[in-house]
Length: 254
Image (cartoon, rainbow, N blue to C red):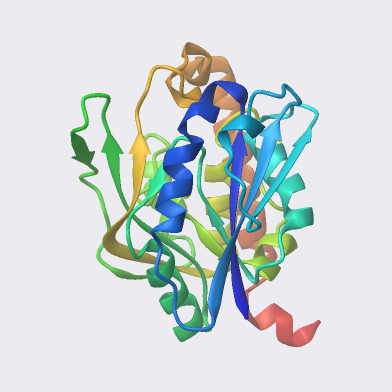
């Protein structure tokens, strides 16, 4: 049986949304011969997260010292057994068919290292809002995401919360960046520096907007920290591009 691993980092305030995330997983239809597992890693050891998780043998729950979402996701890789890794934040929900579409791209296009998809913001009143800079469906060439990000006030044209990536490529880049935020953007730009990606125009994620979300806090937009994060994210992507390391070509020379 082939397996895709869905990784979720969660801190206690967001645990209340885990049942919705789980339902969106249960509702997924996978290609024949495929199964999913859900690796949930608490960023901390509060005892307030586990009660929101159902009894399901496909769920692997862990806890650890607080280190923010990037650290939680990276440590969760130790329990991940799938050849493909899909991100699902604790307060978000997959749309029907999202995993099927990710796998169709990655199994059908061996030169593609990772996928992203369209996102709809889910507002507190239940309405949804789309993004006005989605690229056309299809391949994302190396460097394209970085170029857009640099020209649009450090905002990429594809959302890192929709990332599905080949496990070996993710491990080669060391997982998520050790940053207090923007760690997923840092990984996205690093992936785009060394490999081609893909954008799926059909909506793959509902991105919940709510008062407790980390990206909604004042500290997330503190200009001093934000400038430092963006500088490190950009420098890493540029350094990788200059190394001229290519995926998957590098695999054939290892």
